[in-house]
Amino acid sequence: MDATREYISKLREDFTKGELSEKDVTTNPFIQFEKWMKEAVESQIPEVQAMTLSTVDTEGLPNSRIVYLREYDAHQFTFYTNYNSRKSEQLSYNPYGACLFFWPDLERQIHLKGKIVKASDAVSDAYFNLRPRDSKISAWASPQSQVIDNREVLTNKIAELEETFKDKEIPRPPFWGGFHLQATYYEFWQGRKNRRHDRIAYQLSDSGVWQMMRLAP
Ligand SMILES: Cc1cc2nc3c(=O)[nH]c(=O)nc-3n(C[C@H](O)[C@H](O)[C@H](O)COP(=O)(O)O)c2cc1C
Image (cartoon, rainbow, N blue to C red):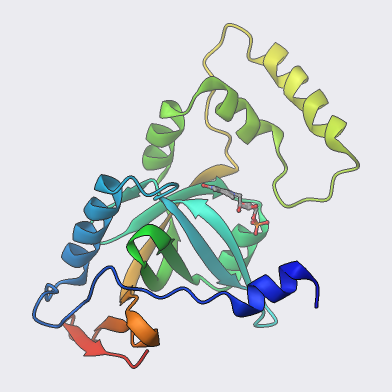
């Protein structure tokens, strides 16, 4: 076995930073999410807003990739992307997905699951207008998830768009915008010593009540 493989196979992190007990968590999982997100921000977790988004293709095969959480409230978690991308195509067939945060410094993981719906034009416009000019150009330039011949395809397109939009406001591309994940399942994971981790999950029942449960680690 080479040194890297040996290192990986023998790596044993123990988790000792916290615990999660039924008596400490809130009955509303969104409040619990807000609490953990606040603690993560205060702990200056790098890339705290990065979440792994999983979607499923028409064959039932999952795809995962990181996207940035940009807004959240009690009903939805919002990210922005290209509406012609692979993830968007998959969501058009199967509008369900999962988002996962992993914050190693806090030894915490949060798993969200639910329906994913497109944001309104007004919401997408408002966020797009906040983006730096170069990011706006990139949104126009990239046929996200498509095969391109080489990097020059992109750089040439960017140069062309810089000319087109010179001294002009850059509008949101019609093929770019937000999605909201409407969470009906939350799971909070706190690492514990000797792999005896805490997992508290919440499922939204048909009657609209959150049911809390403890899962085995
Ligand atoms: C840290 C990080 C943040 C990212 N944020 C976004 C994002 O907010 N929106 C997005 O469309 N892609 C984002 N990406 C790129 C995606 O991971 C992915 O490559 C892209 O969306 C295409 O995915 P798809 O082909 O599965 O649709 C990010 C990647 C990383 C590593």
